[in-house]
Length: 175
Image 1: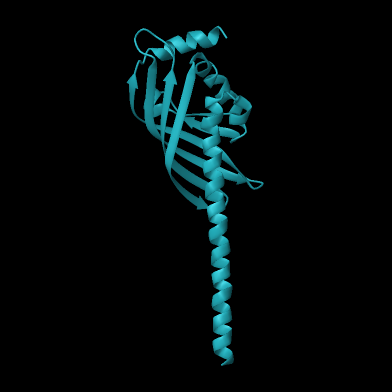
Image 2: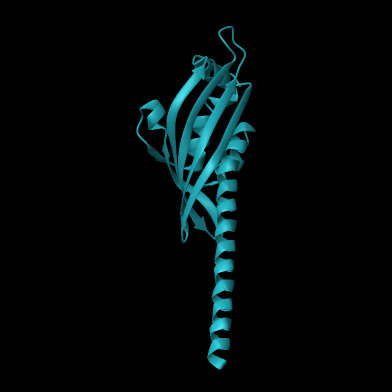
């Protein structure tokens, strides 16, 4: 009888540990999703310090599938400085992300998600330029906060007035 009681108590102890670990993983997944979401929402709001806060001190930024340029390691400020040469030139920007798949390994994680960016700027040839793809992110947990260490865009297609980007660059120079 004593052995049965010990086995039952052991099972409950393991079940409690399993639930606790599951809760931690779910919390980490939510925090990772929130970190990535903040990059896009803060970008749309042109809250550059809010964007920078989601990144680690150095980030591998890779848009090579769309631009053909090599991936480059940059500071958060260098990233937003580059984005500021274009994005403020649009009247509106709207990023939509979803379909997250997240894998966590201790204090590092990989996240995949779909992404669509719609850019609006009035123009006689069309007001909308949309870019569609997916993203791969690597993150590191630093003092209980998830920070992005890699941001890779996987280009699928674009639609609309692709000339809007040049107009936005000119607009951003004049702001």
